Image (cartoon, rainbow, N blue to C red):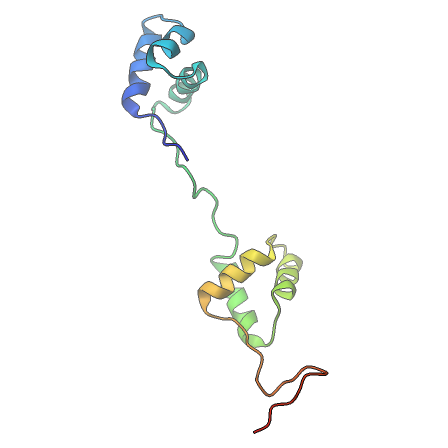
Length: 128
């Protein structure tokens, strides 16, 4: 991923714009796209600053806070599958997917492992 342009080049571009230079001539002189200059003008107009926005990390995890507390209690209450947990969360109005549930369960160290004593149909039994 590319890094945002520095505030220095943003300031230089907008100083030229304030002096009456056209967007295309500013872009050509600074070797940037004309849309950058336009977006920076809009950013300054809307926010009063030129600082670039955050890249990545904007979205808060769905399975945090109260949702995470509920999920921890549910996992400790008995056997589960990831798909079943996802369905139970959906029933509570929490939109998520199996991968997000797996990531949460794995990070919390709450995975459910079947007992060695339970065997599947057709599988050979272990002898003591």
